[in-house]
Amino acid sequence: MHPSPRSIDAVSRIHVHESARAENVRVALVAALRARCVDNRFHYIGDLAARRWRALAASHSPAQDASDGLGAYDTAARAAIAAMPAGPVHVIGVACGDGVKERRLLGALRSVGTPDLAATPMDMSVPLVTAAGEAMAAVPGVRVPHVVACDLGGVADLSRIAGPREPGTRVVTIFGAVSTLGPALVDVARSLLAPGDLLLVSANLLPDHPGARDDVMAQYDNAPTREWLRTVLDEVGLPADAGPIEFRWDGRAGVEEIHADLLLQRDATARLGDDEVPMAAGERVQVLESYRHSPEALRAILETRGLQVLEMAISPSGEEGVAVAALA
Image (cartoon, rainbow, N blue to C red):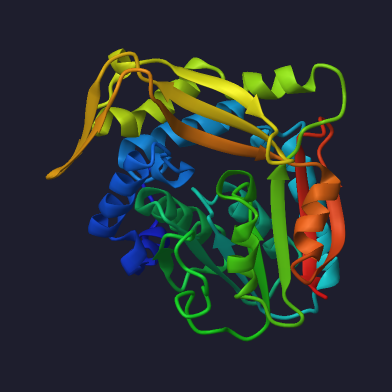
């Protein structure tokens, strides 16, 4: 299926912020390898990594399950629509990935007759933010003023790069990324809000029932996830024979987390351009950190940042939570 002319037109206006330019990303990845901690953000950047992540999310994420997580997003969308005044709406997807969830929100806004509907996707991954621009522009009646690629971990104030403020209500989304990039992303997204705007934040939750930890771990400790995580490792010269990837729970920081580590079984050298990062057998390289919150913890993340929670939607499995919030 080919993108429509509207989709092509939207994607043609991609703004690549300096933080997402190839040389700056390379420098950041070299630093991460030297620190033996490959941040989650590096697993989405390349074309192959982006394709593998999209396939993985479609097959393993409760957030894309029509019988589970999608219901929480739909409930949150209805609550947001009820809380905002009539008039134009501008949806800004922060760390939007491929824009699947934002597209659903835009569809809900369109279905209630929102008169002027605009969308701006923002993500570090150029392939993913391009796909998000296409997805959002494909919703009838939605304008995509521009598409922004930026390193959301390295930009404190998004208001200067999100484009001019449009009339009406801003609805800023952080769907899933608080669980991968951390709660500090809320501070970054908050820079886009003014009184009357809304913030929708989703998080992966850890249900409180027997067997929940095993059920959640099964979404990570599997062949497709290992293949996805190995994409960037292969690209820097750390292939499968360098060592296995192992998953574990880690609650030392007071928040339940799933970590994945590459356990080096032989000496190896990561290479990016002219940079080399030697590594020794026996070392661990962290390649994934995924936070699991409770509804109370998600609420606290928002309230301690001066936000009032208007709705907290929880999926039937208890693994997905979506909060609707506004400036207090």
